[in-house]
Amino acid sequence: MPFRIRDLSVLAYANGFTLWHYQGGADSLATISGLRYFDAAAEMLGAGDLILVAAEDGSRLQRVARISAGRVTIDHPAETGTLHVFVPGINLADAGEHYTLAPAAGFVTALRAVVGAETLGPACLQLCIGGQAVPGGAILVPPGQAAGATFHVQPASGNAVSAGSAISLRCDGQAGRTSPAVVVLEITRA
Image (cartoon, rainbow, N blue to C red; front, side, top):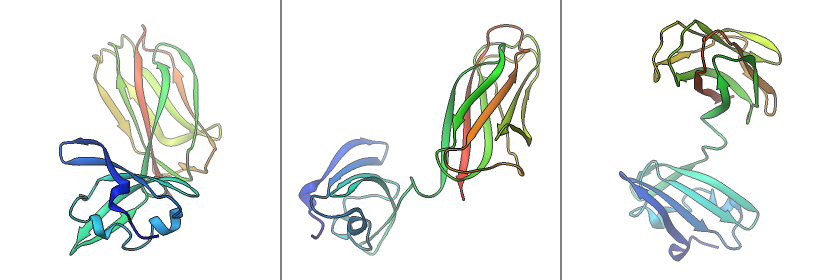
């Protein structure tokens, strides 16, 4: 079936960005993801907009990559690009290991942490894949860091993951007092 404008609706809009929903009816994801499917909506859509598509055979989040001369180019952020994985429950004052699973195959290209309270002692947060420490994957937090201090490392080797593989963060627990940290892994798809 062709694109139907009445089945495209706005879910949210802010600062020039729109999150859309498209009810594809009997159309498949392959059809809806096809070349020129959304061209009839070129004047409504904007580059960077996201479209949550509900099709006969499933659902998918699609991104409007660009619009040129009335042609809409779509890509699929869930299948390409960079993913950001939040690792909850890390306290720099508690020694231990925190686990998450890789949502997709690729490479851990960055580890970022934001300190939630002042650190009294130094703390180390080590990225591990498959139980092995990743070279260049340790964040060293010096003593006396205030809440909001940010740190990041970008490991360049030993950082490959497969979908579903275990990723862990080892904390040495030397921060000296309760110091929660917001930790995010950046995974770039292979």
